[in-house]
Length: 253
Image 1: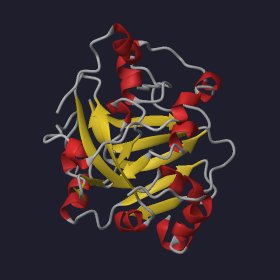
Image 2 (image 1 turned 135 degrees about the horizontal axis):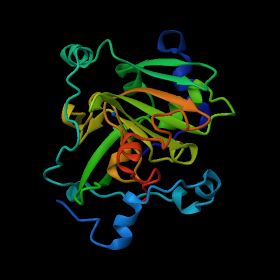
Image 3 (image 1 turned 180 degrees about the vertical axis):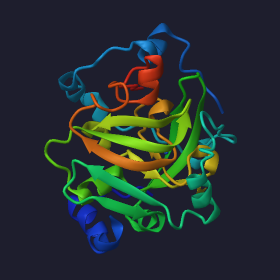
Image 4 (image 1 turned 30 degrees about the horizontal axis):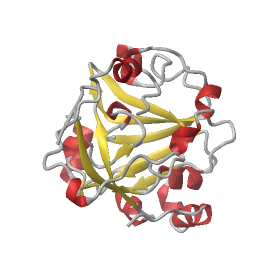
């Protein structure tokens, strides 16, 4: 069952613990139109993005019977760092998700605290840049819950996800704007298919931003940073693959 969250619930859910709280197949790339979004490398003006009202629509949700029997892993399946291995070995008991940057109340949230927040469960289709898709169930609190609890500064326009895994020595990072951050289906998933999120899918927490392609769904998330501009993030395009390979920053589907 999906439970939507009011602003009062968002703030109240974290306020009590604030003192201790401070990452079946279908092809989507067969058409030229489908592939063009991946490699345009264009800078899309924020005003244009804010004007795309269809981004507020919900992604399709599916029934349990439609879930894929196998949901492949992709990209990095293990950060392979001493810090991550230590967290994994103790069940992420000492892990904390930092929420900082342009916020008025920085947070450091444990996995148990994330699990205690109001939850949203959704069965959606994951569409990969490589041309495969799979349907799975995800559960976690809405990203909006944490952003409201952290009290975003009015200057904040984007949220950046800093992850535990690396490509070529560069830590993975991604970003979305506040339109997607406050979308009701944008969650921080700690469960997949009614089990704890597996390591290969980004344990302990991954982003689910259901209106975008898979590379936007950051795995192994360690920190969420609110920023005014993406200019100082990596190469300035807002994400690892955007900087490294020219992928589109907005990968809407």
